[in-house]
Length: 358
Image 1: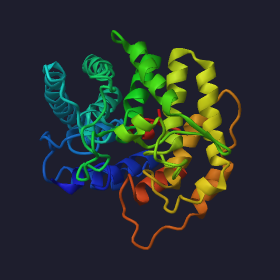
Image 2: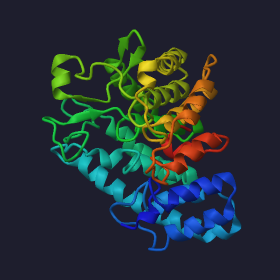
Image 3: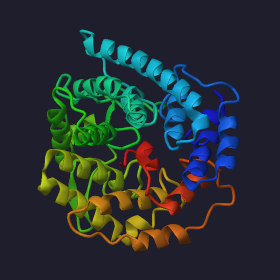
Image 4: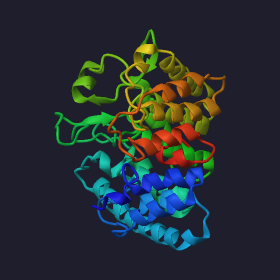
């Protein structure tokens, strides 16, 4: 794999920063580096690698000189998406109802991420095909959710009976956010609202309360189902990728899509309690988007902008500014300097669509 094509930690993600800040010469240099080895439509192509990643980055610019590159990336994204959809529907259609790996459907490597790229590109027809698949994904299989994975949250570390994943990056709240955003957009397929409701009911089952407010476990296992309680004792790091900020934003979007003000209030209250808890905030030790202060701040801006009642987020901007960069901090988007700098810039555009925050 050519590292430059990576939105997560390669030149593509750094180019996104420069496009957003108007540094066209630097952006052009990074784009040249990103495509130096070609544009991948291979099996690993996804929102964060190859043609779909470049499609999302190029959507941030209206430079006339990028029109040909945009067309190439769009064509590649469509090829990748159709191939992945065919495989996913084939799996669902099998009589044994084989369970999906989360890479089939998640934001980082799966069809939810490809749906994000299509939404940014404006390909509504193929996006509807992705949404139709996501609706099918929510159908139960033998008493478990259709998104239940046969492996563990780390695929090289098996969990008996698999797991249900709640993170925006790799779990069901990614599809929830995309389904909600497209319903708000008016891009609707059969069963759309019902799929959102099914996911929300599942999340309601696993919502837990502490003195610091509501939280959701990062994952649940068969043992958790048998016990009726998650083994996770309480809220962990308040990160975008797995924590309350990402899960709350997905539920806020779902509530807006369904016109459910009660759910929206609960999601916003959970987030407000999370950012008021010094114990949770103290677990953030880096500046990155994925699991650091940049991701929390970016999610906070989107949640606050849509909130029913004001949510003060100034302290989070201060927290991000005061968090010291690691000596070996990488330069990339998801866990490095580019993402941290984008969070400091703000969300006046839709660069954070690739985080499914807007």
